[in-house]
Each structure stands twice: as C-alpha cells, then as structure tokens.
Length: 115
Image 1 (tube, rainbow, N blue to C red):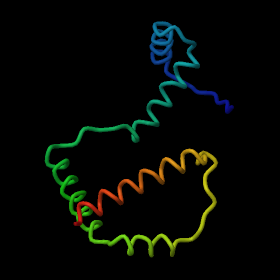
Image 2: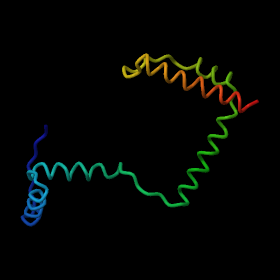
Image 3: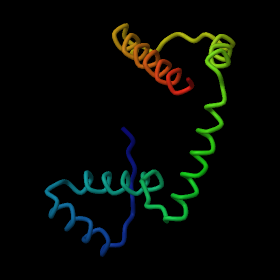
Image 4: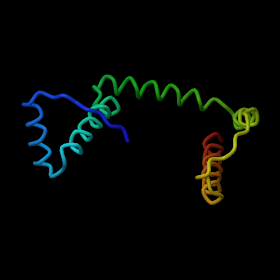
C-alpha cells in the first residue's frame, strides 16, 4: 500500500474530518473513498440524449443487418481461420456445453427463419 503526505488548507481538513465523522469512518478511509470515487468518475454511466440513443440504435441495427448476410458456411470458414487460443480457466466443460447448446439452438432458429 502506498503512503503519501498531503498538505491541506485547515478549512478543507476540518471539512473532511467532519464528513468522515458523519460517515463513521476514519479520515484516511474517507479520503481514499473520495479519491477512488473521483478517479472512477470517467468510467461512470452517463445518460445519453434521445438523439444519441436513436443514432446508436440505428448504427446497431445497420451492423446487425449486415451480420445476417453471412451464411453458416461463411461463419464456419471464419471460425476455422482463427488462431487457436487456450480456453480461459472459467470455461468449465459444463459452461462450454451450455454455450454450445445455445449456439446450436440459435443456428436451428436461424435456419427456420431462412426457410
């Protein structure tokens, strides 16, 4: 764990102490919390405008429509051409079996839709 000395204006120090006391945590815990919260703000979810949502939806639908143009043979060729990678440790045989079943069901549904 890192350590640093920080010089604060006395008024800010008192304010932080008061807020930490109100939260029932140490001043150190409160400052670490506030720093973590502040540094993560760029990763928080922000509301989008209706126009931005509509634009994203249109781009998604366009992409989705273009993906449907591939035949099952095209997909298999792409899968066969990929570089082999070792499976992640979380991919248990049971999970792989469930995923394969879902893929098979999706292919069957797609074949029914195509006919």
